[in-house]
Length: 331
View 1 (cartoon, rainbow, N blue to C red):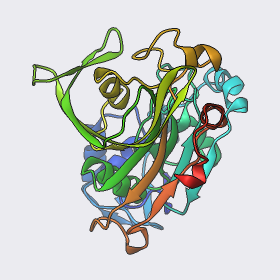
View 2 (cartoon, helix red, strand yellow):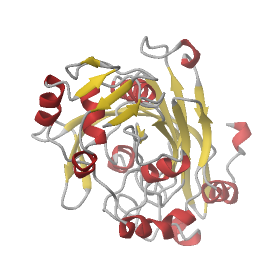
View 3 (tube, one colour):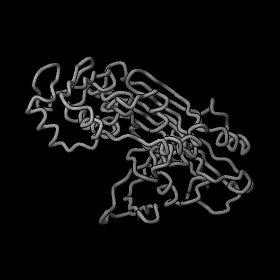
């Protein structure tokens, strides 16, 4: 027999989903069979799996330890050790934290989610930062993703309810997402760009189309020019971008499609550009700068109207300063 006590981070999820996270290798049919036979009980009573668990609830498993452990997925020492080199080098700024959510400032070069089994991404960092134990069924996760070489604000759920709240905010676009981006060329008028994005999975690259096409998704990107300077005989503009939809590579591809690619963008930008060579840029100067929460009903009142902001990386600020852009305080 084993008793699981629901933590504050785990509350709010269905019983059957919590069981599936605790015994990852067991088929769902196993849980329902055990629930019917009363070999799994919630607070000493029969349950069917659809119940929402709350902090302090006790789930009793009338099962042999060998059975339970056989259905649990354990990471190997080799997998854990493979993370260590990257883990020791990863420094993440915590912009905001409470019992349910975290707002982080992701550096350039850090993956939002791992692409390979051995990767150490922001999600793995979260588990280590929060000191999670192997017995917990809830694993913290991020609610929005940034490209590896895009810096800025990423929101994570520390609890089931926090994850549900923020995932819904991103899904329904009930929050505003603002980016700072330095682009090639002079722009002076606010614009709203519309189009369709189609991704080539093999090349991990997207194309912006004017008309809908099979496999393409509709996108919208708004921008406001903050300042244009001439440097080295060329014009550069700092944009404040309001990302309406949030698709893979959207901002970078959308700006490149109108002839104003992000400075430093090796995929959609200008190869060997003057700024790129002078400042030794190997990644786009694009930063997820600000998030503004709305007053959606799903959110507690304490979150209504909250705004989070993160300063761009030192390299980004250094380029702006050397080109002659106004200090951040003037924007």
